[in-house]
Image 1 (tube, rainbow, N blue to C red):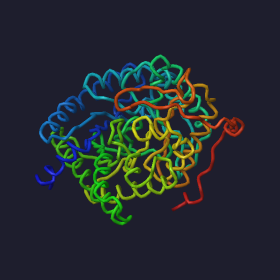
Image 2: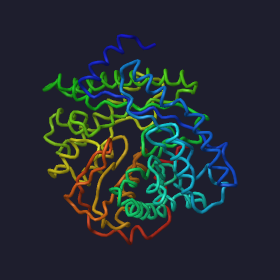
Image 3: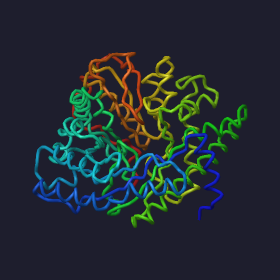
Image 4: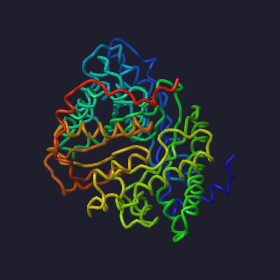
Length: 452
């Protein structure tokens, strides 16, 4: 039971430290919409989404008013379309993406995720149809998000898919170049993707989930930073205890919202994702937490250790506040969405290589990073492979969301707007990995995958 005292205690966090519930995400299974006729499939998924989620935005708005807790986004995730649409036997799924876009707009949500494929051991014809449709689908829709899982710790890495996704990222950039290459901001390539992630662009509704669930993602980098201001100069034990206690309070806010949303929508509660998701607003930054810990800039020596400590203690505090913690849960390090990260990249403290090292200990991976538009597809594939290898070997979720900005080079800026922010275009290693990427096949799973 969550007390009124706990609710009142959050008021200061909301007013002075940018606390919000980042998203209420409704997961919807589309498996019962399967049909050999793609037009009938589109009709079924539109009807199911608009029926299940018809009250999602209203309930979110009502909860926001009742509790005074900002609920920034209301979102939907669906069964990976490559699975749900497999019976259609089509080679182009753009019409499905447009149906998802239409349904999402009809119910008023901010984003819909699940234009996705799981290809960690190889591609079905449906997987290929979806992957090949991504550039057009993301350039011709507004709120549809896409993800592709190319590896797992249990199965290794599908290097054919890695190669193709490097090409797809570049094709998507070209297809959406008149809109600041924004299509790439809605595309994530995963290793060890999870089935209950409420955050975009990587959310999808896994086949092991119930027919419909409510997942909530909380956020609070500013709250953590504010708490750490009170223990300047203290030792690491004090620092860790402060982070844990703060994460507990943040997660309880999400628990309250999740329980009430579940009750009012008559939809089962799934999980709380307690990830610290930054925004471009000053004071709502993971990088500023590092500075409060004692680092001059994000990227300075000690940054990876600081991030490891932050991530671990956020999880320790959060799991005590809810019985159902899931999703990604930890600290995100997107460049364009974090004011402090942007500044660190601009002054040269933060490089792509340092970001890759940091992903070994954070929640996800290389996120919202703008790179030169003339970056070869094989180089993008190499970056994807490196990041996926970190996830595979360390048995954690890793991801890549790169934006090749067509027509722009290192040092120039790109503006995405809203929560997506803006970013300096970062340099990429210019040495070729083409012969490595072009080998094809699959990198086997690591030895520790054999656990039975």
